[in-house]
Length: 70
Image (cartoon, rainbow, N blue to C red; front, side):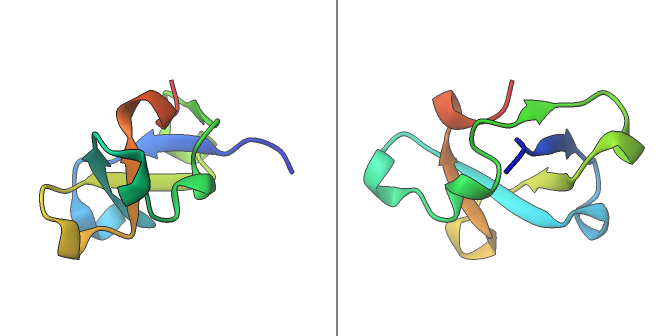
């Protein structure tokens, strides 16, 4: 499987996934969807469009910052 191309959108309705950052690895959820991927500069290049949220109940993916695509 190729690594995911990830773009951070600025509005929630544009996102495929909502992402929350955690500092604890045991709290990660669905992180494998985007972990090890790469950030892209344009929305049209993305396989996965993500929106950063601040509440756990809103998140589809919970990931540690170190595992988030760069």
